[in-house]
Length: 136
Image (cartoon, rainbow, N blue to C red; front, side, top):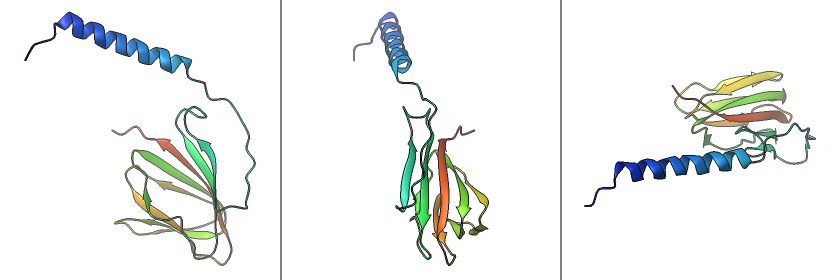
């Protein structure tokens, strides 16, 4: 196996970093905006991440009584729910469920499998915010 000279490796590494920095600096920058919350759908994406934001995503959710969003994981993200109306439960794998009634705030840490269920008699309405987490 032939070895690559250190100077060649360093040059390629430097050029790669320079190319990535150039691409990043030319990427569109997030801009301030307002969005209307439409209550006609179950899930309305609000912020979809880069380049609209620096990495955060969010959406507006409306669940009918007995309805759930379905089990999913936060992965390397943390998630917050701002509950605007209704009563529900955050079901967290391997942990006791978290009951809440609006107005409420729910936090889900990174790498957490969870589901959100409407346990009330009327609609459950909330905004979720998902952001990249800096893991220790």
